[in-house]
Each structure stands twice: as C-alpha cells, then as structure tokens.
Image (cartoon, rainbow, N blue to C red):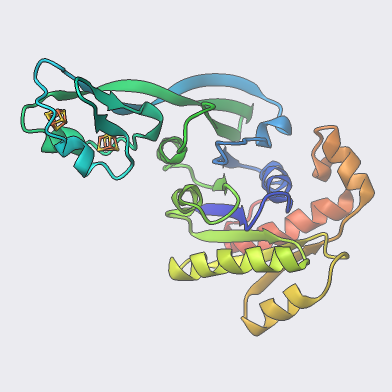
Length: 280
Ligand code: SF4
Ligand code: SF4
C-alpha cells in the first residue's frame, strides 16, 4: 500500500506528520520526495547504507557533422539548444532529457552524455524501517527524475509512505502518482484553506482517495472545517498547536516519543487510513 502525504504549501507540518507516522508504525518504508529541500532525515537517525547518483542525459553536438540548420532548436520546447553562427550552444540546466533533438537532427550530429543531477541516500532506521531521501543538486531545475527513481526503488515495498513536495507542481504529481491514498496536511487559515483547495482539485482530477489532517487546529478559524463538511471530505484528525511541540521539533526529536497526545493522533490516523492493514 502506498500513502502520499502532501500539502498546499510549506510549513503546514507535512514532514512532522510523515516522520512521526512512519516512526509510529511497526514496519514501513518512507521516501522523502521533497528533493529540493529534503528535511525528514533531520528527524530520522539511522545508518546510511547506500548512496547512488541520479543522472540525466544532455546533448553533445559534433561540430564537424552539424550544418546549423536549427531543427534541434525548433524542436526544443525549453530553449536548451540554440545554434549560433559557428557553434550549437547547449544549456544543460534547461535540458529536460527528452531525446527529441537527436531524433530530428538530419546529420546525426547529436549524441548524449550523462550528467549527475542529484543523489539518493538510503538509511536503515531499524530492521523493519527503511528510509530514502533524494537530494537535487543546486542549480538543477527539475527533481522529477530523482522522484521517479525513488519511487522505482521502492515499488515493491509492502507499506510505503511518500513525503511529497508541497504545492501542486509536476514534482508533486510525480510523487503521488500510483498512491492508494493521500493525506493532505493543512492549517485553518485563509491561506491554508485556499492552498488546500488546489490540492483537493488536483487529487479529484486524478481520482485519488484522500483525507485531511488539520494541524494547528486550535488557531485560525472554522472555515476549513465547514469546507470539508460541505465537500464531504474526510477529516482524519485535528492536531492542536502547542509551543512545546515546536521546541521538541527544533531539537530534531520525534513528537511521538515525547507526547502521548501526538502519539494517539498518529494511532488514529494509522487506523483510519490503513484499516485492517494497520499493525501496531
Ligand atoms: S539539428 Fe543537427 S545539424 Fe541541425 S543545427 Fe541542430 S545539431 Fe546541427
Ligand atoms: S533533449 Fe529535449 S530538452 Fe534537451 S535539448 Fe534536446 S530537445 Fe531540448
């Protein structure tokens, strides 16, 4: 079973929910697909068992074969390849590795070479818990390939939690693809509600099953609860804001180890989402 945890914006407590739910369960695998800013690893202590590079291909032009016809440039939607007077310029960071320019080149002047765009780090948390996170190299513009590699590496896991990137970008779409259930993490503020609505639209368009956890539920207003009721969206849990939580998190500690209240919340969410697959 694959469960994605996502949010309309950063700072809603999505990572807190992901790492604590993962730690609460007896047996699970967690992947942090927020590859531009991974932070789950700050809370999960374990041994790094493997690191592997993720590569994309980008074009290399043989000037001796090129006739500067411009067909590669016409084809490229990302302005990543542009013929100048005596050289074809390739902007590696803009290239999306689609392979199209080589297909349209009439003189076979284009070949491809590999470039490392980031890494995947594997951590064994304990004998039943595996955690992987991706890290996009600074300057690279798309982490989708790293997300797809993370998903492929864990496709046979019995219970997979996916900490998704915030928002509704193509990275989020890649992260939730194939999920059996999605948990939206939201907060009861006007911005929180409006960002959550975009996630709801995305999930409905994708025919996903989902529910909502409202964080900092004792702050803000009731609009989010009215919206969930009107839209018949399952409210999985309300989790209150507590200053003590903030100081525990600031120390890189797991809330389930320091708060019975929070641990009970994770138990309820696990029961509701996993049903008879729940094992704790
Ligand atoms: S399509 Fe091929 S031949 Fe034409 S400009 Fe591009 S690399 Fe050169
Ligand atoms: S591989 Fe695709 S994205 Fe990259 S330069 Fe060629 S056409 Fe553009």
